[in-house]
Length: 334
Length: 90
Image (cartoon, rainbow over all chains, first blue to last red; front, side, top):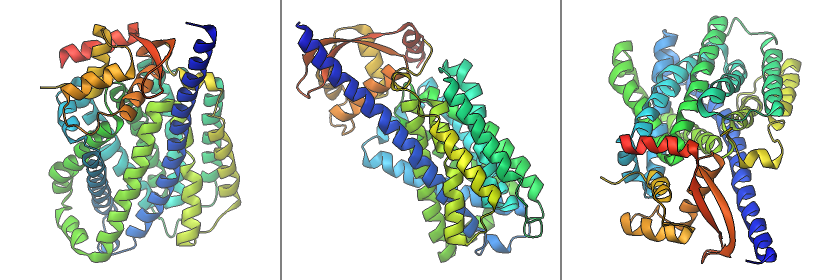
């Protein structure tokens, strides 16, 4: 084979690799936008009946999360069926990595989402979304030993800058009258981060051998079933869930929340598989900026100086994840 | 029971005998007859994903297949061989 032919093939192959990497980065950014909108829609849902009239923040949070996960699951599984991947879900469940993805469902669903939704409820969307920027740190720490993921100093520095940005935002004055359980909201937000970091690593491990849409469907199905069969009955939230499904306004917003939430997850999972956990998480972190933007645009929330400075820091940190091309072509230290 | 497609793809390459995207696609389309998700776009994405995650190594031959994709000789890495144990266990 001539050197010219090899060179032409090399260029074409580089083009394929670059397209794959760019798509991954694009998915990462899309996940940030969708997640930002999702938090704002959730905040609206809590102002509507039946969730608005509930005295118990915990019950309202759990029912809200169950609605989010249930409708998100319908969208995700529907997407899989439309793409002709329905049989793949059943096949995947008969394999070890497929069953491991159920653990991702437990971590990312009942554990992380309940903590996150409570955080939105108790601390407000701007603060809850801010605290949720810390999860890339946990994801990066778990990905190094478990996935043998290469850790670029620039990516780590970017995550560090995001954390500083989140702290800057968190120090802005809190409205303790509107949110009397504010500090509990921050604490549960932190717990959600640990679970999301672990979910990211477990699901990426599964996606090494399984389609990302299939892994996401397993994650959502597990989460939704755990909510419906165990958590809601234990929390006494089944009646409230039925009310939510039979109230037109609430039902409509939860269909929309399911769509934005499933889109955010779909984009996040694809980005993790295509560009690595640390890089995808750093890009996903732009959800803070978008959350603040949507919160200001839709809910007319006040924008403080801390929110602006923190958002700029987080944007800068997230962009630091876009390291040199070679690093995107070979993600693992193997 | 059939294996998930990406599982089967790695297993096929480990066993040898398939080389190009079109080779892989032909075999998979026979095995997963009628399944819409077995197409050139998906298989190219799976191969790329297995490569960036370190499960496959590829050497260019300088040829192009019928889809215009450079033909590569694919090998399962030691890391990828570790993951093949999941296939055996499944």
